[in-house]
Length: 238
Image (cartoon, rainbow, N blue to C red; front, side, top):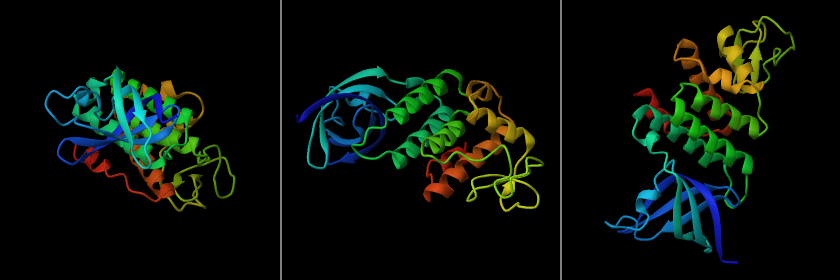
């Protein structure tokens, strides 16, 4: 059928003509979808305010050859708290950008959808410094790129582990070291994130360790996907 309903998160918007926008969604059942929202830039638009990045919506679209057309939108969660706090917004935008780069058009990825919805909800609730870095790291694991953290990725020795190799994909001992320094606290946090203790890791307050993990997550993502996250410049200037 050409008409379909789904739920999705608005990843980004692009102006089209005088009054329209192209909206990129990550949907639950149709993967990444790009659809034209007609007339949303007019004053008094029926659903223009519902289609902002980070918004979680129920939508109805008409399937097109290249771009679909949005015909109905209902808000599930506006995530307004994210857009009203600059620090939250910049972290949220980095998660949206990473998702946009990884998600495939019209290929459902329910695990990625659930992870993004949950991460945005968590960020709005607690504004923790590790929500966005943890999202990037878990996104890589979802893509089959979970790093080796229990032993040296080069020789297999269990300790000491003093560095992290981005291309090698894991912790390194002094002899195999090619990457950046990795503190023991950061290694412990990484093990929590990948070892089923994400909630515990997210309780950490802003510190040198959380800043280290923020940088590491970004560089690891960019190294493996060979793409720069443009939104990181916003974080660096915050």
